[in-house]
Length: 379
Image (cartoon, rainbow, N blue to C red; front, side, top):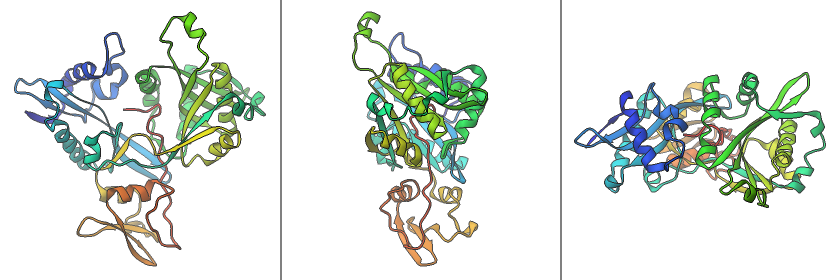
């Protein structure tokens, strides 16, 4: 068995394996859903090959940068992980994960975002991270959000909107560093909607003469039966996949989406930092389900994470983090030093506003905001 980084011409083989594992006949193929993984270009992914040179296991990797407040975190996303049925249970994926982890370290990345929580990842030290809340908007709650709805016109996204949408999504607190081509590609491939059997729509809120105030990417379940039977269904739940814009425009747009698509409810996942929108939805009487962020997180390199978070001694802050000779993280302040623990505790301290990690009473770290990782960007 040979374990190594994928070569560009081998990505078609990897796509065939992934299609056999994840997709059924007639469904959209993996290379169409995830061009960043399977189309020509710089590949960071790894594979295991048998004695004939055929791929038997694949682990996809895509680099990304997270704009987290005042810091930028270099990271990788891991997804489309698959092994041929005849080769499962042999520890092959664990070997590939080790190679991906080393690749991330060599590349200067601090984190691996993983689209899943299988034991393979948890055994390697992957942890649940951050904090988010799923808000469930129903018609009674939506009626509390319509007081200023007549300020906006609502319409489908047009190609000419791409610059405005890009500006809005860049202005979010804690977001992926989107390029224009990235944004267009993920809109076109719609990975979350495709994988979950949803039809994707994009709506914008516009003030005439002033431009776009907000947009929302929404997924609506596809009918599994004839159109006549579908019309008879009484319950239709929509999912907000991505959104951006001013608080008032977003709430008005959410209310519009509920009525426009005749939904019984609309679900939206908000990371902890969107306090203003969360307060508006809570005041309207939406249902709430608290949770962590989506997927799991693996620290690729603790030193790099500390440096990228600007918590090393170089930046001269009151609070710094260091690593002792046993690999334990230490929180240093003018009041003294205290033990943080391992990677799980470090992620809790950095990314969870409700962390239980002890901090000095006079000095508190600012929690680093992260995007919701099962949004428009999904690997």
